Length: 251
Image (cartoon, rainbow, N blue to C red; front, side):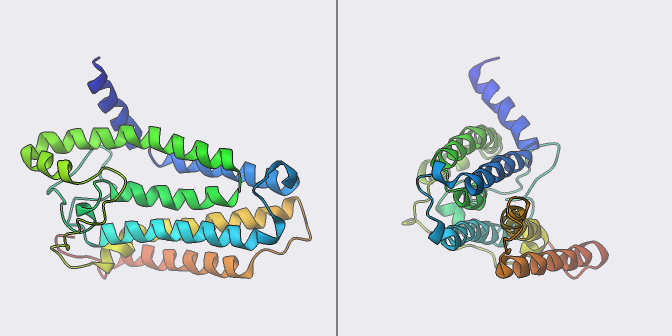
């Protein structure tokens, strides 16, 4: 198999199983976080008095990633910028406005920031660097496969757009306003998992310290946010499956 076809084949395979990468990252990050609790002297960037700040920065970066995804999904037409199908890629149209005028893969930019947030809480420089490299190698193959699909489907239209718009690092000087209205209903349907998972992860990191230090008091703020987002998830799940309140035509 030629290298081009091999890259695309690997990308399509990784695309189908892309949900498992965050689990690996979180488990390793959690282990490194607990290691920091037990042996803080091994982490030269860690200062105990800044513990709350590390969580605040991590949550802030994670929320920024979620906002990127919310903006992307909220302005996306039907059958684009989604989780697609098990059979493969889906693209009825080529998104070129809004955030897609700044970067070709905004959802993966959002994912990167969302998972970078928990990684930062470990305050482990080598783990953070390893995470960035692993993410790039993993998603580079997925982006390659997606772009091959889009190139075959949209031809010269795709080539013209991709020549102007960077793949991963946004170019903020070339913004073109979205051509459709923002849909909160689509955001509620598509991004409820990310919101609830984000705060659940930070809460579990904090609460797991109890296994090592029974005197530890979990953050009240994280507990409230975790419970609140979990309740919101259940409400949105019921609305999506049992009612038509979140249904929209062509979105």
